[in-house]
Image (cartoon, rainbow, N blue to C red; front, side, top):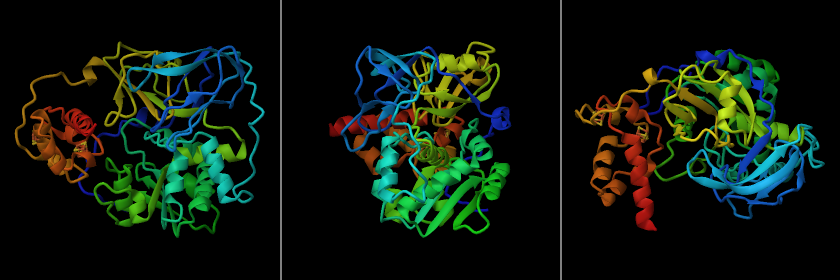
Length: 436
Ligand code: SF4
Ligand code: SF4
């Protein structure tokens, strides 16, 4: 078993509610809302118009910008409108609204593309882009950009199946229910990047998933299975690279700078489906859980489904939630309008009842140093907080504020209830504003 990166924490994993539950497929709702921003990078522009008939898997929006990813329809039906709608990252974003005709008619472009063996690396890369693939571990960075920047530079390819955030079990279920898709997609990535070493990294709390992958791999294979010690944030790229290779990604640098590339297991499986069925990315598995949820589940949800419909599909709320998050409890984004739709980067919808949300109160630093010991990036969270409060922007840069990966470990351990991550995010915005 390998470990270890500096710092980190060991929160209760809270995965029991869904880890044994098979993924259920949620039918698309009568109306789908597809925001033009579903990924990191430039937003897309619609390539359809109101009243146009559309089909499952049809291209709905695209961009010429170098960092972006196209968007496809998860339903057949008619474009109702192109208007601003609430977005899970806040504000209102231009969105294509499609009325679902319930017929699930696939678009003519949805055809199997061949096999990993029969396709050239350039053909595979084109499929990655045309399928609208993005990092599905939560980052939502366009996969074709990541592959392009890593080609010819990496000797180690890592498939990230750590899934270290509490509650979330989508990668775990995928490895149990469709290990051939994970391995098929990883083989496509190997063909694209030609690394010397190819590793699938899984945390030790998912031994059945490891076994499932081991059974699926052929007897003779160049793919290594590595068990990681369970520790948060083991799934963060820099921490994973350190744990698997011992290499440190220097501050401000990328995995390719230490000859590594990291892709998420769900992203790989989506690539496999895009190759073998021709279906672009139109839905994903989401863990729906938390103390306010009546019946926690893993659901395969079409993009554009309003969040409230996803909660209702699990039986709704057992009591009124006081906090709703997209993503896990450590790095998730608070939600205030559940009519906003599910987008590509959302791997969990969590809703918490009153007793599960700590009461607010005075923020008092008792100088215990726990935040410093917990920080996996070797930062000084308490000093970042104090300097952000006093608008000392030069000092924030000296303290490497922008190296913070917003993992939430410092806030989690802080007995003084300081809103450390919130302050760090605010500090990053202040630095961006200063630079214009
Ligand atoms: S300062 Fe940033 S990287 Fe360090 S523990 Fe806090 S959130 Fe994580
Ligand atoms: S963990 Fe909280 S209380 Fe302790 S030093 Fe850091 S900010 Fe202060």
